[in-house]
Image (cartoon, rainbow, N blue to C red):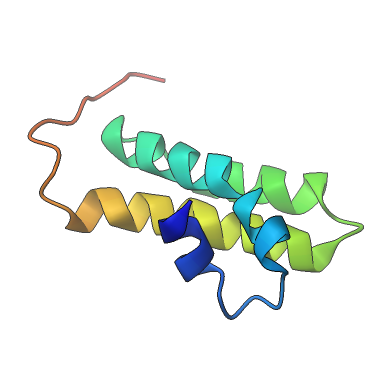
Length: 84
């Protein structure tokens, strides 16, 4: 939750709304861990929240933050390749 809130501090969302994006942070981390492409997920999020563009971009930002966390942290010794 703390990492998600930090990633969304400039989004303009209230803290409570930013906390709701923590699942997208986790999804980003799992996408990195399993070498999944990110474009389709980002497109889905923008479509799902098309009527609320601020929420859509916050979820995409949280998703990217999770992916970047996986990329930069040294907490994970392994990652997995999953065929499409």
